[in-house]
Image (cartoon, rainbow, N blue to C red):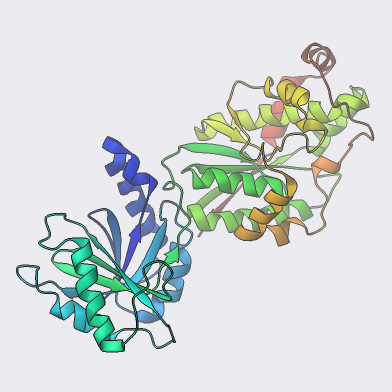
Length: 390
């Protein structure tokens, strides 16, 4: 039997709520690894253990573990039983000596952790004893500051686990602990990154995409579906609402001056998304806004757009610049899809010189010429729902 020991960080700081967060992490791991056969997930003291039989399953298991929020790092380990009094480490030392990596290394160190501080030997004593055994076996020196190899030992009675390699996890908080949000997703670079950052904080995302049909093709919708599939790898199940916005935009064009149309579009999008959030029992809306990036994201226009709804609007990218957003998009794998050419409603009927400093009274006066409730219902009535499972 092979074991993976997964560690968390933020969960350990949750005090009385720690068990709840730990339960959500274990539950999500079981769902994520369900396609793999003979995999068992359980919480141990301060860590999660994933046990499996088939070593060939490790690459798939490793890939999925990297996408589970809440895990800060994990290691594929071997285990040996501890002696009856837990003081005799001879079996553990022999196992480590036989499993040392074949690749060259000039120095090493041993890092030991005890799940139970009542263990008869301290962590430092365990490190010294195992380190001495490895020195005697290999002749390699110990380097505590900058070793080529770190041998990690975890004592979780009745077993001891050891490994020579550690993988970095996704970090953050387990999926579902942050409630449900509605993400306004486009085919661009920003909104997928904004959604990812909220997923990392434990939120479950429902997606809303405003498309330009019948005036534009389905290309933007296809791009968005690819992006949602990518993000579904983190939350395992996603719902995507496709809202027709082309006709709504054309009615706004007929009844409003060009400079304020972008703000009007955004206010109507938020109103429709807020209705979907109510249906989905979501507590907030997520956008990819970055302060000052485009006309709708100036401080004045953000204030006016915000006042279209009472639902909280979350802007995870508000203080990031474009290069930072692009870097994260490349890291999560959405960048290549996002830069594919497409047509979406954000480029439809956009004025050449949008106003960057709108004020609420003037916007409300323009909106008097629009049948807002009818436009909202028009968008909701034409909405298509697609579900994704990983």
